Image (cartoon, rainbow, N blue to C red; front, side, top):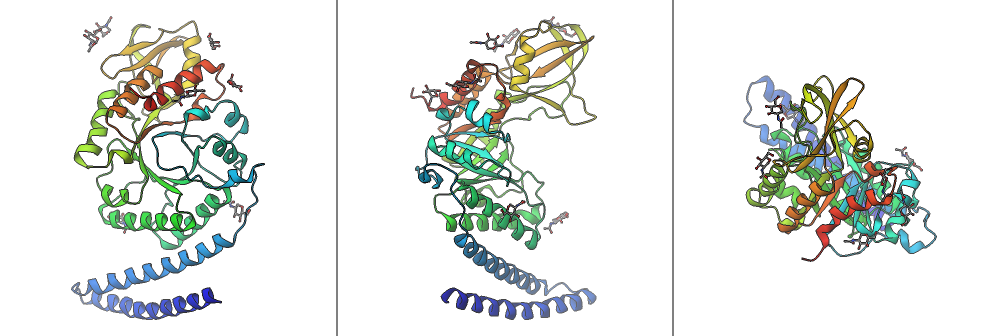
Length: 402
Ligand SMILES: *[C@@H]1O[C@H](CO)[C@@H](O)[C@H](O)[C@H]1NC(C)=O
Ligand SMILES: *[C@@H]1O[C@H](CO)[C@@H](O)[C@H](O)[C@H]1NC(C)=O
Ligand SMILES: *[C@@H]1O[C@H](CO)[C@@H](O)[C@H](O)[C@H]1NC(C)=O
Ligand SMILES: *[C@@H]1O[C@H](CO)[C@@H](O)[C@H](O)[C@H]1NC(C)=O
Ligand SMILES: *[C@@H]1O[C@H](CO)[C@@H](O)[C@H](O)[C@H]1NC(C)=O
Ligand SMILES: *[C@@H]1O[C@H](CO)[C@@H](O)[C@H](O)[C@H]1NC(C)=O
Ligand SMILES: *[C@@H]1O[C@H](CO)[C@@H](O)[C@H](O)[C@H]1NC(C)=O
């Protein structure tokens, strides 16, 4: 009854604002016809109020809907359905796009992780949450940019994704918004992230929020304001030689150092809000100037997306007869390998436990929140546990005391 009354009040306010706003819109037409922009401020305020009221109303109803919605707990132990309340801690984060329960059971080294980031959907097996929570590992739901600044689109996006957070008892939301950001959109993004954060924390104050950014953040991203809403930024310290010719390292140590320093020294981001994301994959291309399998210049095919291999594919290449063996680039501090297929030589530039270890140690020396990896399922179908363990060990060396 009480809620209905509040709803009634809000609807009345919305109606009043609508009528005010339609006056503004009429004025705008009038103003534009007279080529006079002096009164535009008035219009913007009208739009802003309309946005605030409409979004507040939507969010109010959404929270009520979510509170009422009850989802069955898929775990044998019901307590595993609770959102984790583990206090903020150092992080070892891994993305997983695989949806196969076998992968979660056999190839994920839960003891060495603190959070996994998974795009949840209706087809996700809900038992992955039980497995993660058993190991006190948080599950973040990974979401793409809604695709538009339009309020209706963003409302629908919020409803869908917050339902998924609730349905799976997820511990966080990961914003993988890799869209271009114009200067006129900076403030809109701030408002949208603030809105997401407010809703999540109303659902449950322990739910975390993380945001994926490049080594070089987009110039129009207001890192300070957005950062206030986040538990951490996941810095994607890879794709550094995207479309470069010749083929170059995916995650060269000097670029990673510069990138991290940019966040720390120039943007003054709190180190506790940074997780350094590292690649478990590499890019390959065909070698054009081939002197021998040990010394080749190789190019990224620019006619399409650069082609990549998961670490386990690369591991398999290293097991074949016709390859150079692992070669080391001592500038980027990363390995690469040349290998022959038919009459042609190819090269793959990648990261292995050693190159990952160097970057993890650097991250540790800067006292940031943690390290992470894109993607844990790049070890799917590993032939044995020693390959898997060496990759996890290089990551979790972040946690070792000196
Ligand atoms: C990583 O997991 C292994 C068991 O798989 C465990 O022995 C080791 O202590 C873990 N490392 C960390 C840093 O938690
Ligand atoms: C997921 O399932 C729920 C009901 O179980 C449904 O309302 C919702 O639309 C579904 N979402 C998608 C994206 O299919
Ligand atoms: C911001 O400006 C760009 C370029 O002028 C335009 O394409 C975009 O639609 C604008 N965004 C909004 C939300 O108005
Ligand atoms: C590799 O090839 C380049 C160019 O063909 C040549 O300048 C260089 O000396 C070679 N390096 C080695 C180690 O053979
Ligand atoms: C890198 O390797 C080159 C050639 O093998 C060598 O001349 C150079 O000293 C090495 N640099 C470092 C920092 O080890
Ligand atoms: C792991 O598998 C690879 C490829 O099958 C093999 O070369 C390697 O010896 C195995 N390692 C162990 C410890 O079994
Ligand atoms: C790795 O070891 C665990 C037990 O420690 C086992 O359950 C799992 O099947 C093994 N995975 C592989 C790929 O061998």
